[in-house]
Length: 189
Image (cartoon, rainbow, N blue to C red; front, side, top):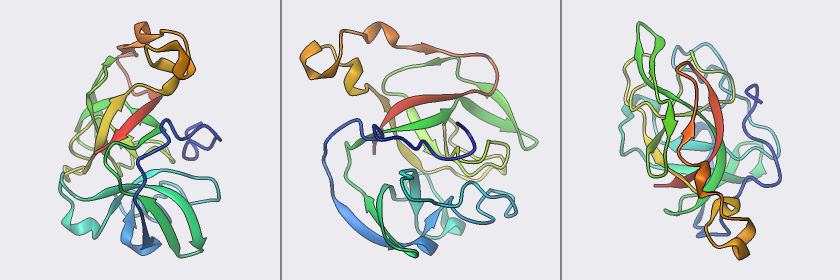
């Protein structure tokens, strides 16, 4: 689970909106070799079928309003198509860390709720393949770009005809008071 990005056919939690833009792999982060906050570890080397949420632009100029997108497909080894449409919903593992202290997770969100913010996080204290967390800063105190918000998966909608029974009782999702990775749907900012 945590040694690669969420990699399944049901990664899309909505059928749109989609605004596809092409980017060079060098223009997105945190993916690839030496992509963790310490500059040595690998968050994940992208593979066919990966659809992580990534930040766009120079890592050195990171801010919470840094653009983000979800990888849709590969054009070739170095060119990727990203969905940059606000409101697009996708599945990903999210770390419940809220703050870091001395490079380690310090406080944790024990009750994941609809509408809570999720950030692109390149912290080396998170497992490989985990690039989203609830923390607005990484383990080096650098700003984490806002990726979006926790949202209902289609199977969680109130209208049973959309794709599932009324499972709104699944929210908030109660998790441990320790670092855990929870598969959830995120609505892109």
